[in-house]
Image 1 (cartoon, rainbow, N blue to C red):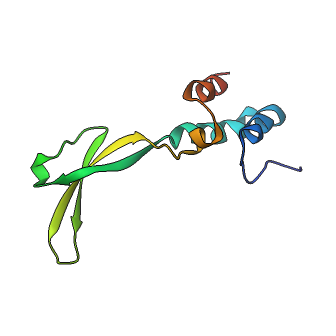
Image 2: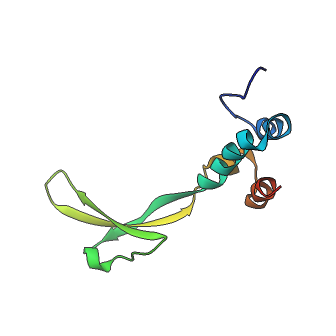
Image 3: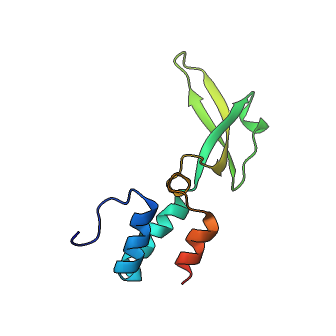
Length: 101
């Protein structure tokens, strides 16, 4: 392999770049694992916009349906079970430890 890989498809790929490249090159890829951990998930339909919770991990999304009516949905930021970090078998502590070296 020549140069930094274009795709990192396995846990071993991440260990390889950490071993073979300077931290300025591999740390962004490892940080992206942490950054991609959370995602927004719909937790239910609301009767009105005011019924929803709004804070750092909750939001209300306004949607206009095909009939032109406005609907409101509650979204919550949660760990995405399909995120790259979990898919590859990393733990959050493992990634943070690598980034703090």
